[in-house]
Each structure stands twice: as C-alpha cells, then as structure tokens.
Length: 349
Image (cartoon, rainbow, N blue to C red; front, side, top):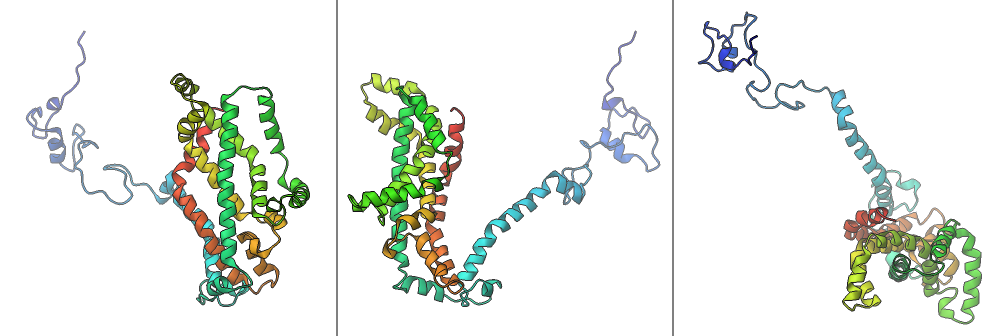
C-alpha cells in the first residue's frame, strides 16, 4: 500500500511540458495561454501580485463591498454619531444665536444669526436693577461650599460604614436608602418652616441666607452620596488599614493620608455632581432666598422672563451662555476621573 505524498510546486507540470521543478508556480500560471488547459495552476490570493488598493476594498483579491454592506457593517455608527452631535449642539447654537439677536424675543431668533449684536451682553452686565455679577458670585459661593461639604461629609460617612462595625450599621444604611426613595418636593414645606424657625435664633442659617441654602443642600444629598462612596470604599483592601495600624498610624492618619488619595475618583465625581446640581437648582433656591442681592443665577435669570415675558429673552440667553462656562470648564477639567469614579464602586458593593 503506497503512502500518499503531498505534491510540491516542483511536481506540477509546466507549460513547456517539463515537470516544473525549475520554475516557480506563479511563473507557470502567468505564462499560461488564455485558452489554458485544465491542469494549469491558477494564481491564488497569496501569490497574486499586490497592486495599489482601490477605495472600499479591504484587501487584495477580495470582493469590494457594496454601500449597503459597508453601512450594515458599521457605517450606521457614523450617522448615529452625527445625529447625536446635532441633537446635543442645536440647543446651544440656538441659545447663542438668541443671545446675539437684537429682537429680544424667541420668535425673532428663529433665523439663526440673522442679526448679530452684543447689546444683550452689555445690558446684562451693566443693569443695576439686575446685578448679574452678584448673582454669579452667590452661585459660585453656594455651589463650591456645597461641593466641598458634600465630599467631606459623604466620605466620612462612607468610611465609617465601610470600615467600622457598630450597632445599627445595617439599619442606618437601610434607612438612608429608604429616605432617598421619597421625592424632595415632599420636604419643601418642612424646610421652609424649619428655616423660618431657625432664622429667629440664628439669622445667618435661616430664610434668605446663603448658608441656610447650603445646609439644606448638604442634608438632601448626604444619603445618595454616602451610598455612592460606600461601594467605592469597599474596593480598598482592609489589609492596608491593618498594616498601617501595626506601624502605629491612627485612624485619622489612615483616613486622610491613605484612604482619601486612593478614592480620589469618586470624590471628584461626587463633588462635580454636587456642584452642578446646586448651581442649576431653581425651586429650592427660590423658596429660601428672598432678597434680590442674594439670588443665585437660576433665580436671578428667571426675573428677565417672568416680569416682562417675551421681551428679555436675549438678555436671559446671554446670561445662560455665561453661566454655562464654569460648568463646562469644570466638566472638561475633571473628565479623566468621571468614568473610573462612576464604575469603580460597581465592582464590589
């Protein structure tokens, strides 16, 4: 019984009748006449000469995909990205066009950039009855103080729940979760009455007080932020705490010098979300703040469209454009922490 052998290029017959051992197979294939015989060697993909690629082909010798095939393979993602960009940028472009319009109404701003003027920005910054810069400073004070306080309070609470075992620990976590289920609107009446009572004893924390508004923000966001940080703190091994304790470190040293640097992403995310929420809040600030000189931006800008509706939309949009600058700058500056801060706590809860 003979053993089958694998044919080599040299065993293939050549065009001149030889066995082809002294000729390369692709030479035999290219030298074959157009009328060819059945035993001729046809050029394969690997042996075909490589020429310049044409548009749409994925490789030499492969069939060119049609437009429908390229769209189904991934081209639709480009259309989806373009649609998302248009959807996201259109309100900003429309608001910017309205802020540069001289008509002062939204109906006159439907034609984008039909007339361009800076009068709205000038009126916004020079109107003594509507102190925009004072409102801007109030918003920055309230938002920065709220963000810093939220981070400090939430981190301390999350560290205690994550590292220490004490009575009612699970009950406290469950209580925080249940409280967050109720909408904040239910607490507005109680908040107003509480601040009204406090203002008789401590006016700097009562109604019409920026510190009182900060205190309300800190209390309202403590539960959700504690849960958000609690999962992230659990991802830090407790062996680090035990090793530092053996070296003589106190709980305060472990917390400030070891744990907080390791959980920086979640601290940044919580601070940024707290800043944005308090910077754009309107309803609660409208209830607490009553003096125009203590208004925040959201409350102050509303005066342009509530007192004289339809006449000061240009000034309103100009103020909104300027108010968006610190939020966008903060978001761009801290964007490297956002993904890791939001997903890190989901690994181990």
